[in-house]
Length: 139
Image (tube, rainbow, N blue to C red):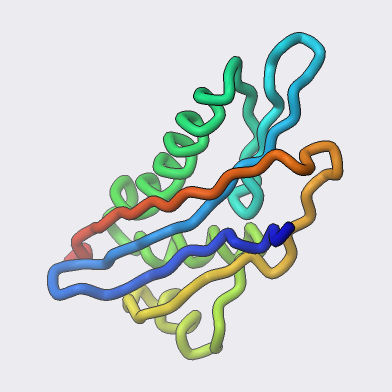
C-alpha cells in the first residue's frame, strides 16, 4: 500500500496564503479496547476509543498543527511553518521555493514527506483525508 501520501501545498492568493494538506492515520486495536493511532509526517501519536474517534481526532490534531503556524503566529508564520515541516522530514521540490518560504514569501509549492517509516504493527488499517486553511499575510 502506498504510504507516502502525506503532503502540504502552499499557494499564494490575492489576500493571503492558502494551505492545503493531505494526511492519513494508521491504527491498531490494543487489548484494552483502545486504538493506538499514528499520523505519519506530522509525527503525531494518539489513542481513541472507537473508529469514529480515530478520524475525528486526526482531523482536529492536524488542524491544530496547521492553525498554530498559520493563525497563532501572525509574524513570520510561513517561515515558521517551513522550518517546522523541514524538521519533521518534509521536502520541497527546488531550493528556490524553500528559500522563498523561509523568507516568508508565499510561493506555489508542495511539501512531501521524504521518508515515512511506519511501524509494522499499524498495517494494514489506514485512511486519508484533506484539510485546508487560509490566512492573511501579516503586514
